[in-house]
Image (cartoon, rainbow, N blue to C red; front, side):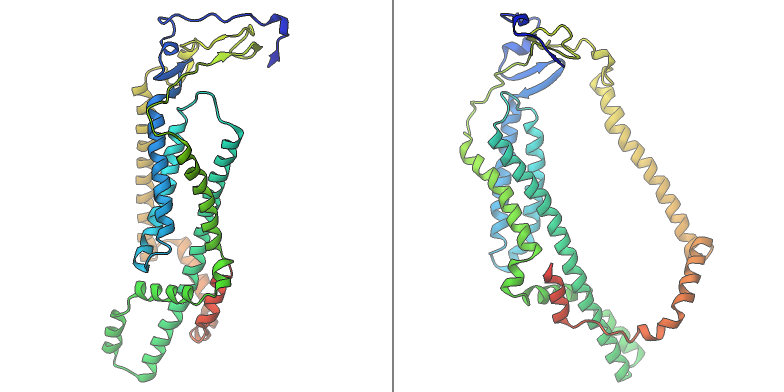
Length: 336
């Protein structure tokens, strides 16, 4: 891009007529070069989702201090927060008037970084807790089996006892024990606490703008783009003038055949491709599973044989391996 000299810049810009450029004469939308840059309706969509973000963030924090029966709603509040942030961002793409101040961009950066990193951190935290809870459940199940063998109970009695095992309940119980055994130090210096701090910082950026943004109908698409007096790909002569209403090269665009055809090609087409590929993969996986079950799959059979040979000498000792006690598991899960 080449800047023109100050003397070559025009004194004025020709104003298009309403017939040439109807977008220039309305405050409901801005349309130039066959593209939308502002649609007034999307401002109110954006505000609506911002209020959902604001409320869902408050509810997410409240569920952490309310009685335990409300904690199950914490995850759903977080999911609502993330999805609302996504749609709020999409709506903001059609709210372009005079741009954004640097301070607002910094707030948005803080908001998105806090949301992204905080979400990844809580996934890692949950994985650590679940792994620790599974170890506790495995140890307790092994203790139950060994106790049953030691008492030499009847085979049908052991079967009846195993039917009463509720793995979900045992896992929840183990998870609760692990979490409640933490000290204040382990609770504060943890991935979970870091998740809360980052999400609060993210939410705070939106909460501040909620109170600074008027909830009224006084929002309009009140600007229109003008080419700068610089030479560029689309402004070959380098003169300052309004961006035209229509793109002179529109026929070269992949969507020039119409929005219906474009929708069929991109949306319906992609769904169709995914459905066909999914069908092929499902049939192939089902046939592989049948061969594996019947022992006809040579690759699986070779792998199973090699695994069996390598583990023959370890089977007897593996039944007597000791699991870590509850305190060690709790300590392992809370260090992170």
